[in-house]
Image (cartoon, rainbow, N blue to C red; front, side):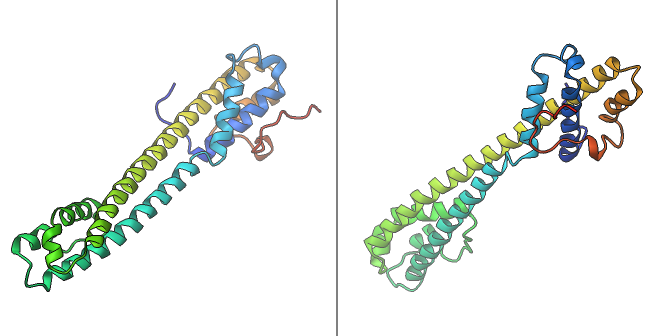
Length: 226
């Protein structure tokens, strides 16, 4: 089987549906020629590619990213409060200023650096309390670090899920294209002397593909016999 799809996804779906309908219409001849299970697999792949199979992971990724950003924004705001206290306190040491990154231009989108600063805030509690911070605010920094790490892990997981879904769709398209090739070649051989039917099989892999009348509906039900 090929390693790269040769059609765009929508075009592959269009040709796959037409191939399924054509093979099913001529099942009396084609069932003996096609590999076992090829039509059932084609139907599953067609419906997976023609539907919204990867929107679940994509939506999950967006939700996870939004959650991470919300937590990071909250953490960034709290870090700003600590830095302001340190910057304006006579009790602040240069070591404390450096530890929590006063003046380093931290951005909320830099999750790793935000986490590092939150960790330093927890470790620097005595010095921060001397600058006017409260133990509750330090506890909040620790809680935000835990939440942000969890949100970051959730985003990583959801990105992985989307990648898996994308790979599965690519595999489904390759199987679908292989099924179209098999239906085309074996149907063309079976109906070599029936020019009208043979032409339909040939159009499955032609430059223009099947006609609109030969395409399948999105839900693949067996065609009603004439």
